Length: 128
Image (cartoon, rainbow, N blue to C red; front, side, top):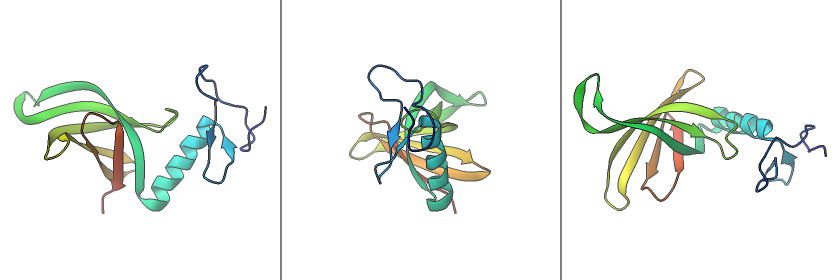
């Protein structure tokens, strides 16, 4: 089966389809989803990605830190676009925790925020 992007569906599990659907209804493979997400980041300076924390650490360069810092990565929905990032966990008055994310994309500095532990969505934007 050929998708609208001209590729075959991406390798996938039984609970997924191997393609994403654009707002205009076109079916595109996961690689093309990643390219579309990158293009949106370049053009709009904003993105909503998924935060996946890999390792917690309460020290920075051997010194006790004020918050909890961790290594993590940001991904798009199918996981075909991955950005390593650095996260500081702080407090939020409603959600309890707030994860402040810092990363670089194509030489530009970006930041993101995820509020609470009941979501993985991280709202990111390019720094001025």
